[in-house]
Image 1 (cartoon, rainbow over the protein chains, first blue to last red):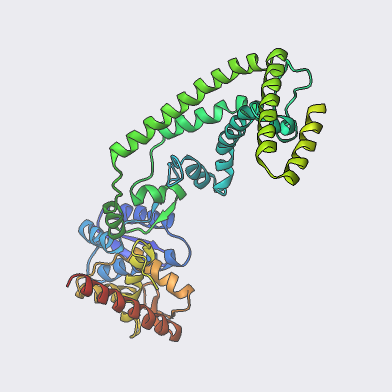
Image 2: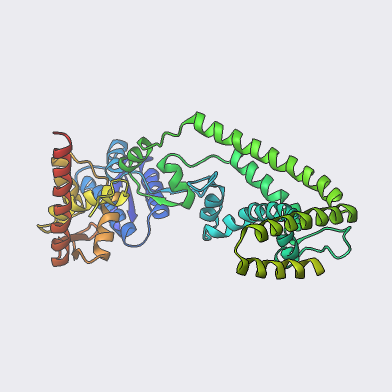
Length: 288
Length: 106
C-alpha cells in the first residue's frame, strides 16, 4: 500500500494519497518562503518526513502534525486604501501611503483650495480699505483696469478647485479609517510573519475611536462646506455690485473723507512736528 | 531611554532573545523548537527560520552544515560574540521593563 516519492534527493515512503498532499504542501512552502528561509524550512520538512519513513510510511496524521510544527505559510498582506492619521480626515496621508509618495504632495493639492479661499477672503475684505486696494493688484494679480471686470488668480483657482473639495469629502465619507493593526499593516502591504502567534496579537490590538466624535466632526465639515458654498454665491453677487464704477467712486469718496477726518483728528491732537509730516502725506494722497 | 511598547520589534525581539539564549549551545532547528516547547513556548518553524535568517544577517549567529545519511543536511546554529553582546543588551532592556512592571503593579 505504501508509495515511494523522492523530493530534493530525499526518498520518503508514504501511504496512498498522502504523497500528493506532501507534494502540494511542499509547493505551498516554495510559494510562500524564499531564499535561506525556504531552504531551512523545506530541509526541516523533509527531515521530519524522512525520520518517520525510516520506521513506517507517512500517514495523513503525521503530515498534519508536521504542518502544525512548521506553521502556517507566510500570509501575504494585500495593499488596501485606508484613511490613516492625518490632520482632517487622514485622506492625504492614506493616499501618500498607498502611492508611496511624501505626505505633503496630496496635502498641498487638497490645501491649495483652502489657502486660496483665505487669500480670496483677504482680497474681498481689502476692497473696503484704500491702502490694500491700491496695492491689491500687486499682491493678488487682480485685473481692475476697466472697473467692470473683476478676476484674479485666487478667484480662478478657487472656482476650479471644487472637484478637490468634493473628492476629499467623498473619500472622507466612503473610505474607512485604518483602525486595527492588521488594517494598518494593509496600508503598506507586504508579508506578515507566518504564525498564529502574531496574528492573534495583531487582531487583539484595536483602537477605540468614539463614534459620536467622528459623527460630529463629519457633520461640522459638511456644514462648513455648505457655508463655503453659500459664501461663494454671496461673493459673486456682491462682486457684480461692487465692481460697478459708481460704487467704486462712492467707496473712494467715503474712504478719502474718512481718512481726511482721521488726519484732521491727528493734526488737532498731535504735537506740531508730527502734524507736519501727516499733512504733507495727506496732501500728496489727495492730489492722486 | 523610553520603551516603545507599540513597537512590533519588541514582540519579535522577545523571540529573538529566547532563541539566542537557547543557542548558547550548538543546536539545529528542531532542537531549538523542542527546547522552547519544554518551556511551554510554541514556536512554528516557519517563524523560527525567519528569525534565524535575520539574526544571521546581523551576524548574531553562525551555522555549519552537517551531512546525514539519506536525509537532508542539517544546519547547526550557534551564537557569535556580537550576538552575545546583543543578548546582554536586550536582557538589560527586559530587566528594565520588568522593574517598570513591578513598580507599576505595586
